[in-house]
Length: 188
Image 1 (cartoon, one colour):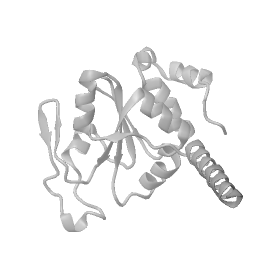
Image 2 (cartoon, helix red, strand yellow; image 1 turned 120 degrees about the vertical axis):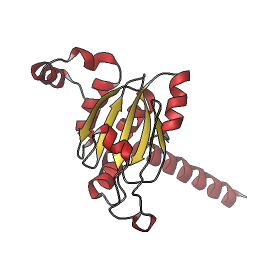
Image 3 (cartoon, one colour; image 1 turned 180 degrees about the vertical axis):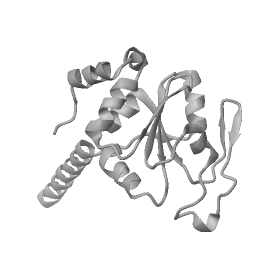
């Protein structure tokens, strides 16, 4: 009887420890489709962050692992944004502002290597991967940010574009001031 008590106690301690460790080091971003983001905008308007990637892109995979899996970044995105992943060489059909975008040159046999560029990626002006694209809560393009971003870099843009604050930044010196006064929530 006493032996079973210790087994249960050990199991509970082990479970609590694993639960705590997994929750303190990683958190998942609630990725949704662009259509789901459009629908969610009607109920609860938020800005959108669009992760434009390709299957073959090494820096895209690193950004997923090192930046988007960061607990602080994931929590911030989940709280302030609708998060969408978009394969810039995939075959998904996108409806955006009354237009339909496809990848007419998509080749299924090359789905895990370089493929044709999706027309929506071209429409957004994306020509490098990864690119992080920000939209406001009315689906207007704010800006694309090209390249791999570490958590400290992405955090600045997340804070700047989470609401209309970015509209007050009209020059490089004002952006430099924003960065200078920015208080990171990341532990370095």
